Length: 260
Length: 322
Image (cartoon, rainbow over all chains, first blue to last red; front, side, top):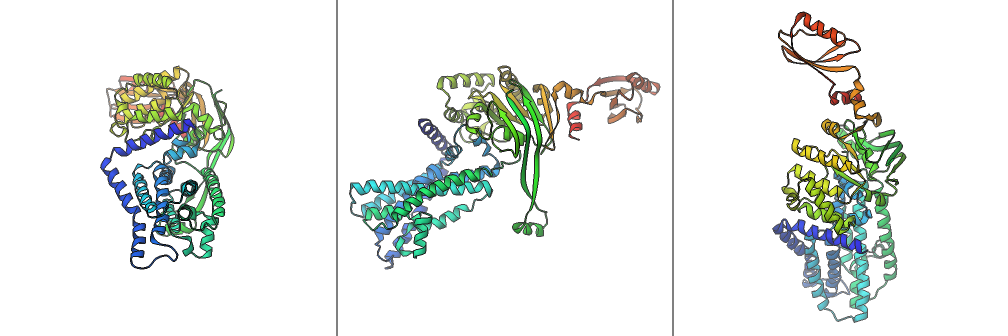
């Protein structure tokens, strides 16, 4: 484990040094990412300011769901999620070979390529939005904060599982860059209160793909709202992670490299 | 034996479509599946410390062989044991003992100095700091790379970059090193420097498997050569045996004082006319004796200069590919 941490830190240092080679581009990209992440909370604010809203949910409550989602995304994207684009590119170019000749777990080696420094803008945005959102709601108490951290870890796990599945699809369907748009469409369900969806969608985002864990459940815990379907979502989260890893290795068998 | 390959086969699926607009549209819905037999029952073994040249035309199966031997690809059938491991089954343990240099795929990170990439390999291979420093110093000295390892990779020339690729591939002291066109695009001096490095490392006991289209590399480095064509081994033997493959054939460069006539004799093939007075010919000594050939020329011409040598290795390889 110590060795893995050392490798990850070295890879992070190299990724930072690589990105610092084009500093202005890095800062502009990170700023754009930060601003871009604020669009959905802003739209929600506009909806509520115009007198509309989600029944049973006040603005600061919906804002908290979105803040949790953005914070989770802000952690996943700079540290892991780059594997989607990098893996798909490496598979297409045949340079994924270079990872396969390293004496480490291939999924871990792939994760090292997923460090995306400019996505730190997402993390900064996530932290800022989360701090602001939490300051608008009553303190839930120490115990609930501990439970929140556990649910938040699950939120990150769901993000990571998505990243594994999207990246792995590139082994079979080479050059599958559009997969990210499917991810964006699906995860948009995670940024709103579950009660606004039909029963079918609620089952889908809790029992099948635990999207509700990405924002709704952790935020509901802080807000003291009912946590129906939480247990089934947690079980689904474990299955989703196991499935994503299984899917990764299954798809890896389809890797054909490129001619050379 | 450090590597043993038995009846190795690799078949993969590819898709074919025509170039017309209609065929392109049709390929969205239906694609013609084609089974490609990249390797057909190939068997060979390699001794520890060998420097083997793996040759073949494009698409012959060289890279597929290398990819199976490095654990990158699964074979369809057959057995491989390399350094006591089955590469694709025990990949993680096995690859700790091998190194690879791909002439067309860089292991260095483009925007940062090679030294940073070396540190990455130090962490990945868990190389002790003392060993790392010792090996780095040794290779940096051998390849005269003291300054270049500190410059961003993108600012290095191809030759400088390749020197760094070699350091990167050998920092962890691999027992077997796979080289896939390591001198592609390099100038004469850079090639020579790389060749000397390979020879010195080989003298220290490292086994090298070299695939290349550069016959100079093969002649300078390989003692044994395997030629693959259409997924099958068409030659496996010592370099000298490869040179003698064409047996009785010799290349004659002939210059005369008078204009040379077109020579139409059994056992004589005109390779090219260098001028009206000079030509390069291929003689088959089984069909025409050298004395008789010289006598025939002297009957009508006066020989100004003549040189006789073995056919170039390219000619031998070309014959094997045919």
